[in-house]
Amino acid sequence: MLLELRGKVKAGRICRMSDLGKGQRGRVLNIKVDNPALRRRLFDMGITRGVEFEIKKISPLGDPVDIALRGYELCLRKSSMEQIEVEVLA
Image (cartoon, rainbow, N blue to C red; front, side, top):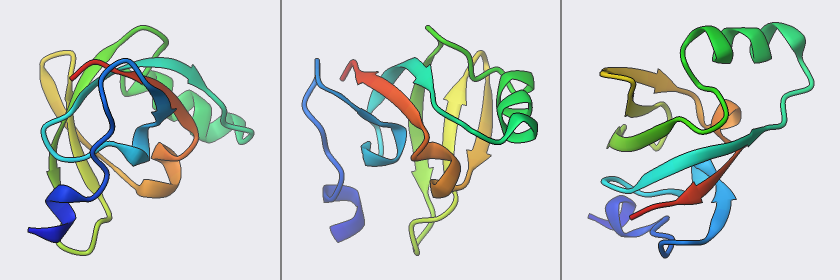
C-alpha cells in the first residue's frame, strides 16, 4: 500500500520516469543516457522522444518496474528510468 502511494506526481509536471507511481501515464521528453550501449538498447525497446507509456506494476521492493508502451509491456530498472525525463499526463 505504501509503495503505491509513494511517487504520485501531478499531471503537467516534468520529472524523471522513476518518480511516477503505479497507474500513472507519461510522455518521454528526453533520454539523458551517457552510455551509448544503454541508449541504443532503450531506443530498440521503443523508448523514444514523444512515446506515451503507463506504469503498470512496481515490484514489492521497487525494482524493476513494468511499463506499457507501443502495445506491449516492458520491465525497466529504476537506474535506467532515472535517466529518462518525462511529462506526466495523468
